[in-house]
Length: 137
Image (cartoon, rainbow, N blue to C red):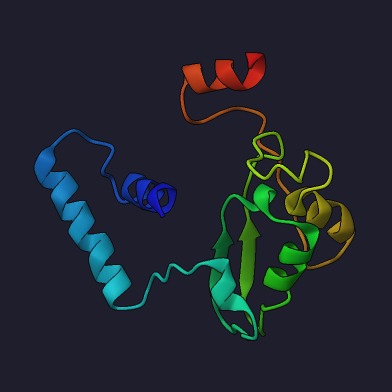
């Protein structure tokens, strides 16, 4: 769950070096989780559910199989919005590649559907070093 908390801290302003701000940010995140405004679940807990009126973010979707993506997206109930994020060139699953992973599968299969949208980011937002590594390594 480290990447999720890293991103929440970034969103809530913890990228600043002030230790007080960092502690305050962590307290805010814990409050949102305690009040169930933010829920963090492993994908295995989605099976059998129908999740209505929620905003769901599936991070690292490039590491899912097409079957797992179908399982996840098909859990969306009325009013739910779902975002799948990932980089099809940074796959950790040894059985998937840039064209066979669940994220790429979803993008290709959902093209042309009225309720679907796709955005490809062309620039790394992490750092210059991360951009260079993605390009050269």
